[in-house]
Image 1 (cartoon, rainbow, N blue to C red):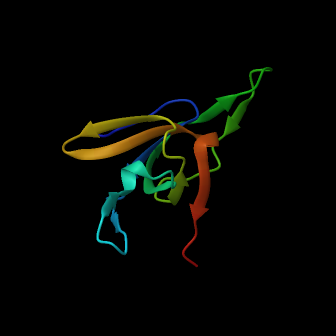
Image 2 (cartoon, rainbow, N blue to C red; image 1 turned 90 degrees about the vertical axis):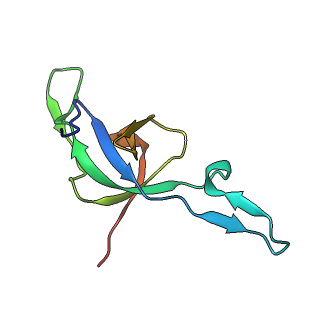
Image 3 (cartoon, rainbow, N blue to C red; image 1 turned 60 degrees about the vertical axis):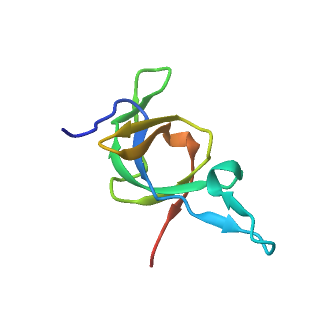
Amino acid sequence: MTLRTIGDKIVVFLDKEEEVTTEGGIIIPESVTNRPIAGTVLATGAGEYDNKGNLIPMTIDEGKRVFCTRYSGTTIKYNNDEYLVVRERDILAIIDDR
């Protein structure tokens, strides 16, 4: 089964979160920090329609690595993997490995 989306939605496969250890040895899971999360775009919709009915195509392609805001979109779990479904405007940055 393949995850697909519609409209201006994007399916992002989330990277595994890392824990942060303080100098005193306290482990702080990344999930309690307010840092952006990273992942890989698995699927994109066609885009969004403007108020005149014209399609505005997506500017993010499948396979790109991106940063998203932590609490945007909807988190889904499928086959023990975690995905995030967000709108294109919730993408903070594209990670370009040039």
